[in-house]
Image (cartoon, rainbow, N blue to C red; front, side):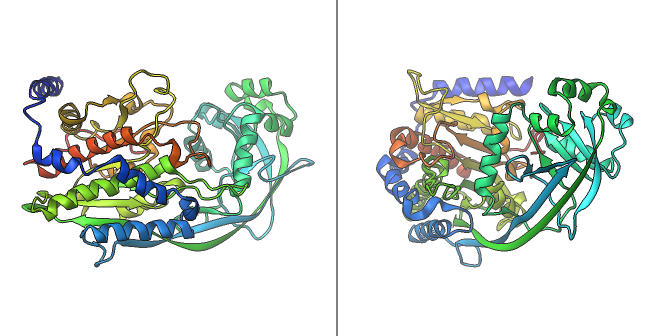
Length: 498
């Protein structure tokens, strides 16, 4: 309760001092963040020449070189033994042969099922397919799952959790339904089919014998020769009433290493130089789609990346004028976000600067557009702010103070709720800092029809609004880098599991 009174009082004070609290020096360098500068950089970064910046591909490496040269030209330091690139390998996994047969039905990969598990087998295995439905203790007491393929009805449940529970109970593998409707499943299967030749990217690790097959509700009905409505009811109350089926399956896997790199530029601080503020974005995107169209990723996340570049320009210009920040700043552009936050995970596990000295992460992912919620609004000067008050009682207040003082955007917190069904908090790179108890702010404009489509292009970017958002981030970053005390970690991380 005391914390809430303190926050309210400080915000009231901020409103009173709005004009007099403006710092002419900060305003001077904020003016270097311009719509023209953002557009010039984004026009290259989201051009066809970079082929959608897919992780490990030519376009991603061209983007990395572009970013590294930018930081070098600004006079920033390459903090990786003098280099601007943090190089590492990912593993590209391709399942060259995945078969599933139930009864007399030989199912087709990426049509009848989508393989979402792991495994590598020399020959096919045989097992009974039993129906469990819900992965409850009651159902597990009724159905013997040891050594069996297990049919799960996981609509509305956390699929990762139920899969883990059933595998720990001794299942040989899982056949799982997670969504209603054949059309929804078909869309997912088509996406997997288009990506199947590229392989799954991740960190190299030993194979786990975890055959997990995702199927539609209609296909589950067909395999067990039982209507969907009866399966739904049996999933809750009497899964043992559904007759088991004979099944066989085979999984063969190929792995190759894919070199990639995070990019970073470092500005050393003055009296608090051992403390580091990280300003991040991901610069990768999804490459070329199955129809040969380039997914340019202008908003996702070209917008965040060029914002980091312009914010770096503003700080570098101040430093050249003798006005260096008290704390050091790491401008970090990570790779592999679209493959599962891989670049930021690698950095957080292999930090260039100790995580205990990392005071905050300011993450920028999609700040160039207007989303569904605001597309018809009269006032479209908004930005979504996520995660700003979970770990530190000060961080949200500092950001709001700088917004009141300098930019006047509407700060929208609707996606900051722990039960947000979109789970945006878990879907960008700040997550890999927050999980180490580093206070974060994630700036975001929301999704739109062009999200992850070849139509996410530069001509649709709202550059004046994007400029205002970037200026807010600059002002907040300047404040965090120069204040007397680092933001305290006085909150509890309640969102540790993706």
